[in-house]
Image 1: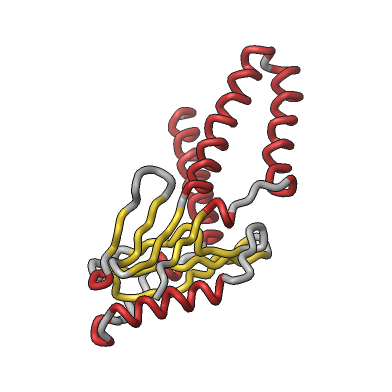
Image 2: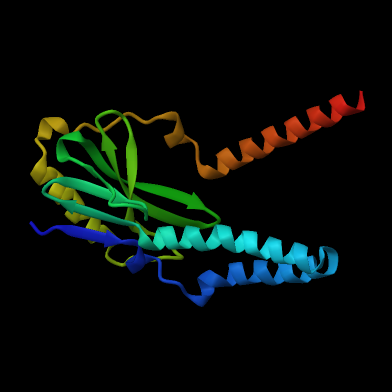
Length: 190
């Protein structure tokens, strides 16, 4: 079988619709910062926003996954990546994440020690659609089935984090923050 390579730069193509939210944030920072913070404060606010967003985009753009005879290699944008040999991979599936009315899918592998890794470049969503996601995922499964014995393929049990959606985690985190803030305010007033 041929080696498979899934690259972030093939999936995460910059477009105006994807850059528009960042541009709107920068314009809002310039307007609000210019009237309330002055030139120096606005400069630092915009610089910090870009210092966070640009490296994040570059790392996702440089990320890649390779599937071959030696196993699955995952690189998140820095270095040569980490190779997980086939004998360490217990299960392969697709993670479905729902949020804001859209759904995204990412291929992931489960290791024998319980860790799991998403494969950069082998993902699809409404913002970054990959028309051949299902075919590429099936090619990954074919490699896995070809390279492992059926007794090694064991579906891991669901963990707590599989049951908690990102939305539920965000709501719980927001409630915890609100409670902590109220406790701090109440302690300061007494």
